Length: 123
Image 1 (spheres, helix red, strand yellow):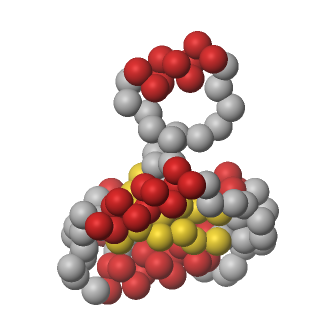
Image 2 (image 1 turned 120 degrees about the horizontal axis):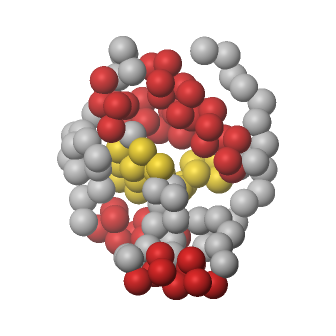
Image 3 (image 1 turned 90 degrees about the vertical axis):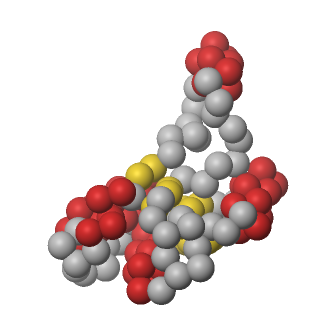
């Protein structure tokens, strides 16, 4: 698959999930890869309702709930290639997930996330 030029975080994520769909035959575990829709603009009522339902700030964008090597799951906080800041809440979640046996990382761009997933699945 050729390297796509993308820009926004949403475009990077779409490109990653297109690659995952294309690569499922090689990596069947990709069927379990999913996005955690925590971010985005919300009105105050919706934000309040989501918080009451368990949404927490800083949870990584993507999860692959498959054990590999010494890890129990892979979490990726996906940022666009250029720019995009990792918040304190995101850093806290990444550190906590790593402490409990997950692999939790920040990836800049879909191709970096793809490489991380492939490394993870080869462990």
